[in-house]
Length: 305
Image (cartoon, rainbow, N blue to C red; front, side, top):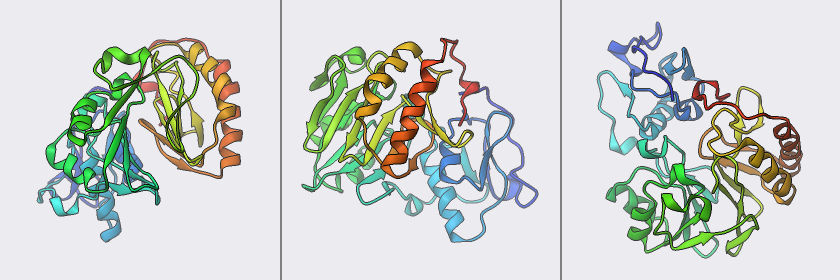
């Protein structure tokens, strides 16, 4: 999401020649900073390791960041990444796991696995494709559905769905990104995916953007809105809205009051867990703020991570 910068020493504690660092392929996608927030920060429009890990817990954080990074930019100078240190799929709570292994073909988007009470699993958006990863995710349970939130995250949907024997879902507004989808969501009315899982069309970021809410607990928002560490609130990516910020405002006005959830789980931007009533209040405030926004050119550097 930004121009490449020359790699610099990670810190006085551990320079690039002796420790962890981020190389100059970094695109400032924020994924690493979500996973290792005290060790990796944004500096000059890219991620940078600001100090070396102290203890096993922080080393695990850096491994999580390294195995999620879509450009494989996070490395140790003297050690190869150890497959045994790959934490994915990574539990976020008892119902959702983070896939990791973000893909360069989905703009480094986060993707998730949703466990169902029946023992089956749904995949929301897609990590990079590999047979080994697919088998690892499938070991959690039979994957019945691959739910795409919008066109930008559709790259590997068909391959994962075919591997699992699952149904691939997308909205008609973005159908050209997955023309062979098995299920097509239409219009702006909410639709049931399965018991406890509901799709809410939310045109704005793209024409066919959708969010999925499971059990009034987990909201998979795609790129429609996210948690910003900069503002400490839910935000829309007004600087990266491909279709229409005014349509997004209308979508929120129509939909926000219907939503109830505790976990905000976006494709880009950070995750957040708050009581449902607080999330509802913040969504009402987001709706009011978005109504005041005007269209503007796409500018990745203006993202308020």
